Length: 120
Image: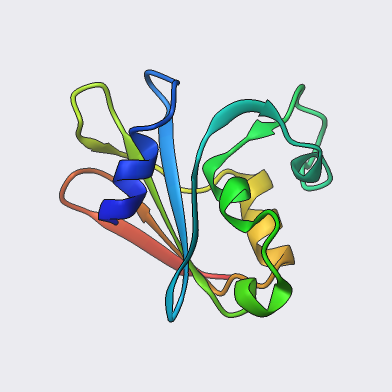
């Protein structure tokens, strides 16, 4: 989770700094949320919600071979203005994208003391 925190600190969003790390045996990729358009994400929106930006989770899986994403675990952290962990459960778009590429487990921050997880 420490690497996900460090990735989140690179985001330029003051209140929504998210970082994600894709792991399968070892760290395979890491990313943070950016204000870049992400066409890959639009297909996983349940309804059109405007411009799809590059969420940390999407950045971590983009460009990765299916052999890496399938069966992997993704760690997602959100860092607040004070440097504390905040809720970072993936949104429905990211949840569907992670499921689509075969990620098997999601671990996310809830607050500084608690993390949540679920299987896909």
